[in-house]
Image (cartoon, rainbow over all chains, first blue to last red):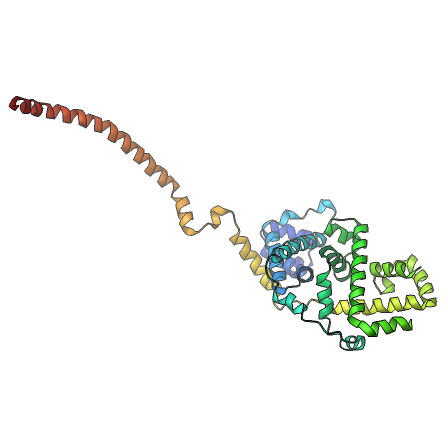
Length: 198
Length: 140
């Protein structure tokens, strides 16, 4: 029985959860929680808020498992991503009315410009890049995160963000342009000399 | 393909050319192979993507799934409709509504009875007191 549940698809697990099956709901949580948390964290940049957001979303899923409508042609995972993104955006807006959290403040401590070689060697000092990503306009950041780090196709990302595929493309291109500029500034002279050589 | 077009394609499909659409792969390889500027753009994009991959890696906190599962169940019970989630004193109040209605009815009944009986009492009182008044008047 347990094996059947573990092998069950999202749709059948949701149906069982709607009937009050704790086991089915638990499998859904374990199956999707990591990616939901990653999405929420990349939107919010705050571990505590990301976990709260994911908890809210799964609590809502348990209380109202009928929120996903298969007939609309959206995969359960895409729908769940959309819910997490929307809830994370709400949380982000609520937070913007309060002082910044420790996680985000930590991003702002980075001020030195390490050499490109050092960055490549250690690959650890990426706090400045996280800060740059967090400074991106919300929709640009989301489009980039969904397309490159959550493995969604542009069509799926468009569905999550409720915009056209062209809109997603435009957001991704602009996000990357801004990050390239940040990379240029961060790498400073090493980057310039590399460009001049070329 | 110019530098700006190439940068847009890199932004859209990433620096890993194996993931590019088939119709663009060969054209990209041919042009970049002959163009040092495009090669430089490509190298920088590879660097940026590698750094972004590290920067945006999200380590999952230990025990996250268990916590989320338990919290979801707890939240679902704490966010039931108001009638079931109100504080105990209010729930008690809600349960004693019939009793409250009975008390109100009794109160109205008592009031009505009091008024009715009161008027009779006053009449009775008057009739009882009338001889006394007569005696009093005779003294006067």
